[in-house]
Image 1 (tube, rainbow, N blue to C red):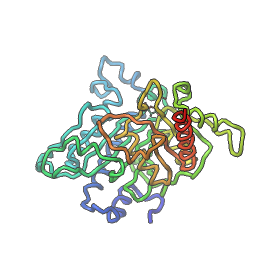
Image 2 (cartoon, rainbow, N blue to C red):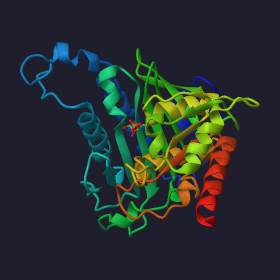
Image 3 (cartoon, rainbow, N blue to C red):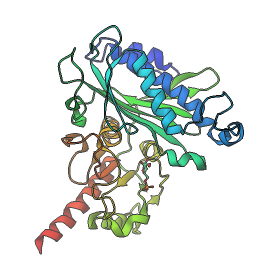
Image 4 (cartoon, rainbow, N blue to C red):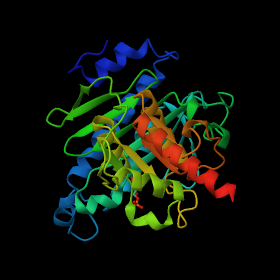
Length: 341
Ligand code: P6P
């Protein structure tokens, strides 16, 4: 049983035996993500100062080329995982194609592939709103010893062995699951150590918060419009409160703690929605289900969707189980009405 104030390192060691593939490789992989998270956190936290300290030509105070933070985050996570000879392939929102990692001393002997959104919500950096990194981990399905193929990445979310996010907010947290519940670790920046601060995180079955960009309301499917109007009605525990940060990790994290629902539906502008299945929706869906919440595209469980493309988008509804199920009921009712004429 995990106890509060355990360090992430102690937690990984203690729980390694509960993970069915106990080669220690996954532990080393989570540790490499932890290290990269601390490096990115350092840069994100001083982002507001970049214009001050980085005003000397195109280089920053360290004399390095000025980099956009999402490019920096991408390079940091890729370099950290590559150098430690832990994964055989990486796919990133910032990379058009997947990267095959031919480990130096072994030929593609590693078993895991990682898909990552290195800095989700990075447009919020300029206005000092919290952002996040999202990661998803699978075992490869093609033969060990051969270069990874697209097939290793186009796996259903139900095949994930681990998933998580780092939220760079008022405090920096790493929240992840290996299929045995969800645990949250808060960084003590003074000593660079993550401590178990939120053991066994659970979505409240219901909540009073709905998160959606209502600026797109007129473009939403009728079922989503009907659900939003339901949230706004004076009845029972409603109206709910609308909270939308514009940063998936932040909205998800708050809703997991307080209870709520996040929606990024398809619209006439985004025919499949905006969020990416493989490195945004699937990892957040794994966390949601492990925290007794739910995640669907409005009709189908996110983790049952058969991927067809690396950067494919899907509609995304995720959060407290009862709220997601109510939204799905509105989607189903609207679809029935539309097809009954
Ligand atoms: P919009 C950030 O770009 C992101 O991928 C999510 O983190 C966030 O919830 C959503 O897009 C915001 O998109 O269209 O509402 O600005």
